[in-house]
Image (cartoon, rainbow, N blue to C red; front, side, top):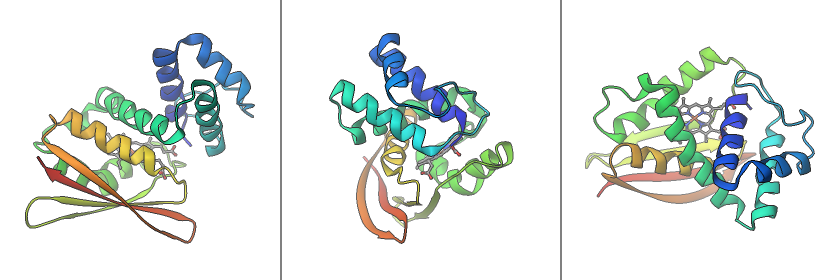
Length: 181
Ligand code: HEM
């Protein structure tokens, strides 16, 4: 997993729970990297899982809630770090339809070793958007948080519903419906 995910996660821990808590979590998570990350580096996916589990133990907050909150934080940070991806898009549906074949495609050019999910979108006749998340990284809660963050960024004009589908082999599958309010 790319270092940018780790640096943003540590920043969020520091802001929400304080530098001491962040330091304790990094120490107790037993990270092969020692918890030193650069944005462009690549680290074992298990390290982000270890960080989230340790933070959950220490704060008593549920793992899915922490991952979702992180997704929403990440989306806010992406609007600052990658403003071009948000420019000239009138609606959240326009943005979400571009994630798989444009935004993540650009991410892959920038970081050829990125591990990205499959995010198929289907725009319905009534303007609702279906997004199907598939990935064997099992980061559906992160996807949910990112979608919630996008709804916030585009002015709360939409809601979303989540439906967990049967796993396909190793892949977690989730159907999100993004509907106008
Ligand atoms: C400007 C917008 C976005 C940027 C720049 C971006 C970039 C990235 C990057 C850098 C990663 C990490 C890849 C790796 O660690 O190897 C990632 C992973 C991921 N992205 Fe995006 N992303 C964006 C929007 C979204 C949105 C809106 C969703 C909503 C569904 C999404 C879903 C995910 C998920 C769930 C992962 C974790 C990997 C997985 O589940 O397989 N991304 N993205």
